Length: 86
Image (cartoon, rainbow, N blue to C red; front, side):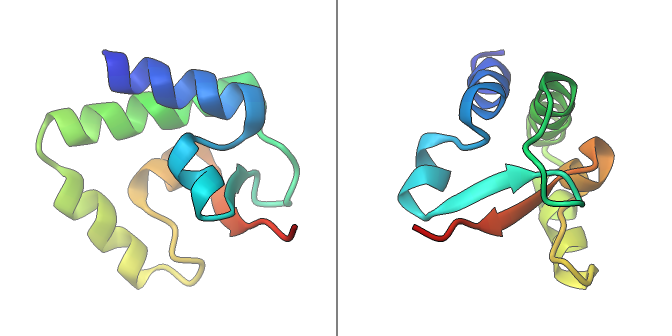
């Protein structure tokens, strides 16, 4: 429950978790806009459920075969991770 809440609250507030901030990454919509709270919660929930059910290898494997390197939790929430220019 804590990882889901952390992910959702951080993404809702800034579009970034602490790790994404350190790597200059941000979660956005496919159009490149900031995500809305609904997308932040969907992404956090999808990621938490997949990791909790030990499906993280499948989640990450999907990212290897998609054009935009989009993992399963990103496809579910309709989000993308992009590099932030400083």
